[in-house]
Structures are given as C-alpha cells and as structure tokens.
Image (cartoon, rainbow over all chains, first blue to last red; front, side, top):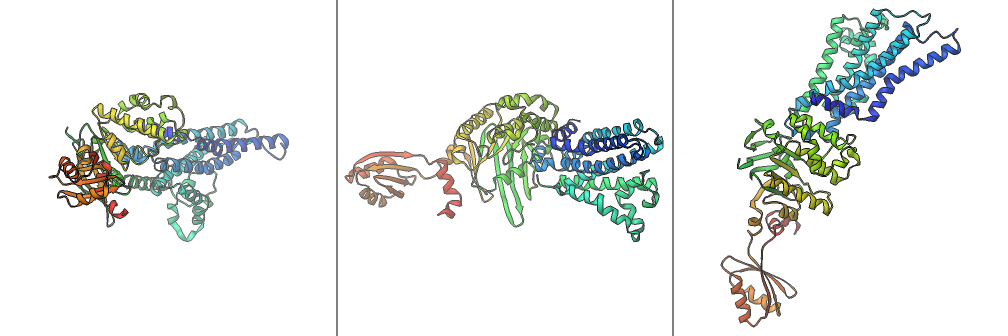
Length: 250
Length: 306
C-alpha cells in the first residue's frame, strides 16, 4: 500500500497533468453543458434543455473519447516517470523486485484517474437528470451501459498506456494510442474483409457496451467476447511492461 | 562481518569489450574504500554490477556476506547507493522524494526521513521542490536517501562531482563521520586528492581491471624511494648521481634534483658521496610518493598521454 500511495503522490503532484486531466474530463462536460444551457435560454424553441437522454449521449461521447485521452496521458506518465526522471535505479537498489515496482503503477494510476473520471461522470449525470426538462430521461439500464462503456474504454486505455509506455520507455505511446483510438482502429473496423478478426480490436470491443452507438456501426460480438478482448489487451500490455521493467538495465 | 564487498573474477562485457574484467575485490568492513580510476575505467559499470542494476557476464559477488543475486533483497536492505549523479522527481519536494523511496524499503525507513534530512542539513529546504535545488543540495539529498536504509554499506559514485570546495569539505566530513559510526563507504572517484584525503583503503582500476589494492598509505609509498636534493652545482651532482650504483633515475629542475633510489641505497650514502665530491648540499629530503604519482605510474593512461 505504501508503494501504491507513493505512485499516486508522484502523479498527483504533477500540476500540469492534473490540470489537463480535469479540463479534458470535467471541463469538457462543464463547457458543453454550459453551452447547451445558454442556447436553451437564448432560443428555447430551437434548442432543448441541456439534460435528458440525448444529451447524455453527447456527454458520454466526450467522457469516453477525452477520458481515454486523459487515461493515456496519465498512464504514460505512470509508466515512464521513474525511468525518465532517473529514479528507477534508486528504487531498484532498495532490493524491491522490479516486477513489484511495475505492478504498483496500475493501482496508483487508477487511484488518480478514477476520481477525476467519476467527477466528470457525476457532472454529466447531474446535467442529464437535473436539466432534463421536457426531454425524456434515460433509463437505469441505459445509464448503466453508458457507465460500463465509459469505464471499460478509459480504464483499458489507462492500463494499456502504462504497460506500453514502460515497454517502450517512451511517452511517444501517447501519440500512438490516440492515433489508434481515433483513426486507425475505426478504419480497420470499417474493413469488412477482415471479418471476425475485427473483434480483436479493443475499440470495437469497448463500443459493444455503448448504448448510444447504432448496432449497424458495431462489430457484432457477444458481451463475453468483448470482455475477453478487453482483458486480453490489458493483459498483453501489462505483461509487456512488466517483462521489460524486469529485464532492462537500470 | 569482516568483508562487506567481495567479488571473484567479476566480469561485465558489452559485446566484445569487457568493461569489468575479472575483478577480484575485497572491501573490509568499517573503512572508507576508494575505487580510483580515470574516466572510462569501468568504475560505474562495476558499481552497477555490484548492485544488480545490470547483470554480470560472469563471476561472483557477495554484499554484506550475502551471495548475489540469490540474496539480493536481504543485502540491499542495508545498502545505500548513489550511482552516477543523484536523480530525483523534480516536481516533488525533497521530503516527498524520500517518501517515495522509503515506501520501497521497510516500514522503519518512514521514521528515518526527518533524521536523514537533518543529518545532511536539508530540513529547512525539505518542502521545496527538488527542481529548485543546487547540485550540492541534490548530492546531500542523495546521501539522505541512502540513510533511509540505515546502511551498513554506502556506495557513492563520484560524490564530489560538481561540488564547490566548501561542498567537497562538507562531503568529506560526512563520509568520515559515517565511517566513525561503523559504516563502510565504497567511494568511486577519479579525484586522486580526494581519495587520499578521505579513504583508508583504495583499489586502483583501469581498463576494467583492478591493478592495485590496499591501504592508501601503503600504496602511495609502494614506489621507489625518492630524494629531493638542492645543491650548489646541479650539473656536477647529476653527473655524479648518474654514475652512482643504486640510483635508478635523476630528474633535475634548476638547482633541485629528484633522485629515485633502489632499496639498497639510502639518503646518508647519497649525501656522503655528494659532499666528498665537493658539492654543497643545502637540502636533502626523502619524500613519500603521493597516491597521484602511484596512480599515474600504474595506470596505462600515463603511457597514452606521453
């Protein structure tokens, strides 16, 4: 637990990282909500209330996409900061197994990232239900599936970023993963010739849980398959990061 | 425990090049041990290999009497080390940096943070971010980080690097104080003067091999005895000494001669010979070779420079 607390300390004290994480998650939802509130106040005939199910889709889209960007940035910092700051060797000479030094990065980063994400989700739900007005409110099931989608997509990206950043020993992983999530994965998902192989794409597996994405735009797979694919990505990245952390010269 | 570091035929290769080449090293407990060599001699690689930061290619290592890497964790629990320059998370304070490393050590390390900071005189700056620290302060914080282990063995890689004269003096006093507490200091350096002033024992290393090791005084005086002589006629004295049996070398500078003697010739005999030849001797001083002279004599770098 002391090592996990040390990991969170290292991340929490990075002011720039924390500010950008809050802006991308809580900030993006707040700004979008504020714009919708103003539009509704100025022209209520053309712009509905800022809440309701339709607007939850918008908030969920922001939280999943920008939340994933935040997760990637936080994960890359967690995966590389000991090495990039030259402190890794000082941790190794304490005699702690290197695998332990890697393993604690996952809970440490989660403890920093999840409260920020929860804050963004709480704001989104407050706007959704508090300002629903005449818009229909989402059902409990819809909300649950939205939360699962946001949670799975962002947390998988966080852990993948930690593992790949430790494996590559570089924060270039930030750009690679953002490009993968926003462009490459979607292009591959559109290539129908790939058939069932598209199920192996993490973005496709995460989108399986999204209630807002039309079924025709999803790669068809079961919930179990989607879960296994996401777990596979997490395991592969974590193993790669752990292996290289244990093997590299310090 | 009599020996805190013992290596047998320790070798670390990078491709075909041996950075550490079959080193047999014995570091006794309770001393400041200098690991002396020119830049690139393999000192840092040796330290990294001792600490398991990089894997040895072959050979055996024992730290605090515990075979490595089998009992690595037990041994390193009582070892503090600064390898190359001390590095920290710049966005954290000095205290927070110690908290991070203490978390990787046993729980008692948490309770040593304040004492360690006080010991190196950083209590007042403990809550400032490390990026505002000078190099000297970072060196001291590095020592404080080592003290979290309550170390029986401190391994310091070039601890005087970048320090001003006051900082060097302070570091020297700190090291001697640690030795006074019964800790062993393994100090690598290319600064001959510092090793001579700080250490009790020394190993001279070059091209990855230990060339000499022993007490500083013994190694420094292990060369040929030398006389510094001042005479009224240096040219005549030089001619006389060049022909004198037992004189191995004569160097002259103005009226001063530096005369190297073999073991069977003493200063009195040389003096008698000069006086009998009518040469007035105003100074005749046996000198001890400095560690620097011994170092230059035994390292191959001397040959390269010439």
